[in-house]
Length: 157
Image (cartoon, rainbow, N blue to C red; front, side):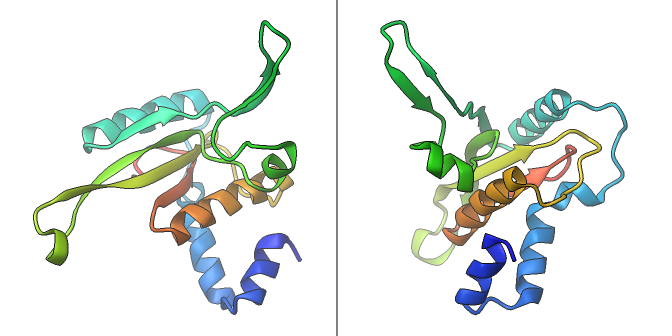
């Protein structure tokens, strides 16, 4: 049993709800892929799509290196330690989706946090540690009211 299923069991999340969450977050993997489409090409297409829909997405480079002075630096969201990076991996694209809300904020546009993990066209979820950590990030974002997805094609926003 992986950590996501353990968490779901601990919080009483029904298996059907967890399966629905996984299906929604991995929405892009069910479509028939365009063979030969690289992750970079799909990422560019998703950014164009987001912009056309009034959203903004920026590249979220995650990693660690030494600077010119020998200082060790970590960069990217949810990368505060090697331990954190093993269990949660933020999406390739981070941005804001404008949302017009009603009632208390009638007519006001608010920004909803948006995270997109981009995969090559032929990607399919296989349950690797990396994929589990990426899914953990997506589940966290969704649980806090943001929107997160894992996509291997454009047209999913």
